[in-house]
Length: 238
Image (cartoon, rainbow, N blue to C red):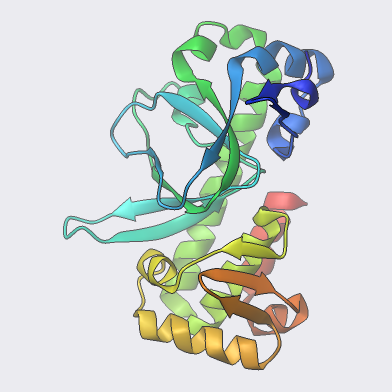
């Protein structure tokens, strides 16, 4: 059985995860029975730092924020995970508990796999383990770049970079997004996010209505973004 023919809830689940799609056909066929196609909602917690994860998550439409929680309760985004990645990397490196907190930022589809089911058969999936560990290095580099960006660049540059990163991972021009959640994730006031959205809408870069953003002109956002967007895109997708 191939991933492309897996049926969930009476409908075919279409493979969008580029990490899974990069596996050879035989390994994908062995992995397919262990995968369940699910829909993730905005705000769903997928992993909590310091706690063991029950599932591996492979976004294929959803976008997940890797966040750092502070003692006061604030959660600041350190990176984005989309179809190029996986939530639950600690399993592949032998760590007993999650190294990151992961929260669904943009709702959408994902595959999930029971950690214990695959841990018992990990030797059967050398390509998956290699791909996950490679992605772990990429995510670490992206987190470092985001930290530098947040420390040195303007809100306008950071928001432009974030929207471009989200657009790359969403695979579509329209996606659900609230000012409140973005403001919390990048640790800025909601008023700043709203002002940015108004300015970008006036510039023709985005349209925004009722919690949904549409990327209308990427070139405007690319002109506003700092060099961090290009750096993250190169070592993530190139």
